Image 1 (tube, protein in one colour):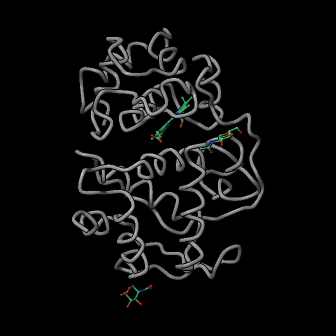
Image 2 (cartoon, helix red, strand yellow):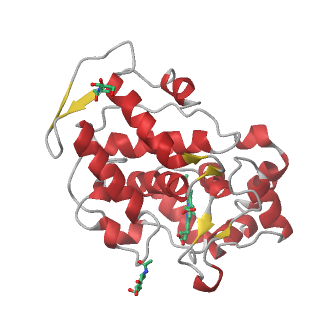
Image 3 (cartoon, helix red, strand yellow):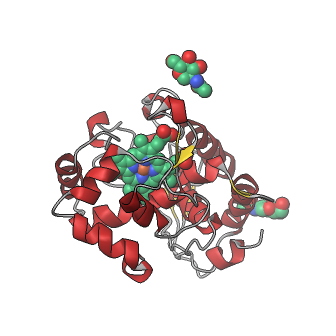
Length: 250
Ligand code: HEM
Ligand SMILES: *[C@@H]1O[C@H](CO)[C@@H](O)[C@H](O)[C@H]1NC(C)=O
Ligand SMILES: *[C@@H]1O[C@H](CO)[C@@H](O)[C@H](O)[C@H]1NC(C)=O
């Protein structure tokens, strides 16, 4: 577990001790990371990092956190794991990680919404040059499935995407920055003929190559949605800025 301590030292102090979900209760704040999260970290490290680097489940964990936060009425509330949301996409690449995290939440008696975000932070760190992302533990959870239409699709136009993100309080800059997570991404279901194609040429490295190579047309695969954001008058200048400026993207 070669990065776990770095990550854990940055984890915020509000802590949920859940009984096995769906019931949970909130404990008082603590000054240190409870050992249960260290144990979860250990288990996730085994899944996300191999001798060769980054695994499929690590990338899927990042995407799963996005979906969990983006759907539903109040942010990141584990609705992903409930009520069949994992069954939405045939062959969805987040189904396995969703089921894994659901089991781990029960096994360790922590919040499912929390473990989804914890796993994503862990996965980002697993990427080469991945930053340490602070996450807060203690999310409220709910069991209402979200409307499926809220999740952006790979063929959505920039207008649709800007509007979907604006409804969640995200600006044009936010949207353009967030899709930069496709720096650590592959596609499996959008184009079956090229399943496993990455969205930049360094899918295990957290960098701005996604922006550069999407602009240059030198990526193995691009979503129409990303290309649309690259071209839209509202977001094109931001997309170009990030391509040339890691600090701006970060
Ligand atoms: C504009 C909105 C977005 C659209 C339309 C979109 C669409 C997609 C699609 C279609 C896939 C491929 C799934 C598959 O075939 O297996 C994918 C993968 C991925 N997305 Fe997005 N995405 C968006 C935004 C985001 C955001 C905001 C994040 C995270 C912050 C994210 C993280 C990822 C990751 C990490 C993968 C790779 C999963 C893997 O390699 O298994 N995406 N995205
Ligand atoms: C974490 O793992 C250690 C060592 O296996 C064990 O002794 C401890 O009880 C675990 N803590 C929790 C909260 O699961
Ligand atoms: C994907 O979905 C198709 C059609 O429902 C099914 O036949 C196939 O077995 C699925 N593949 C995987 C890997 O789940």
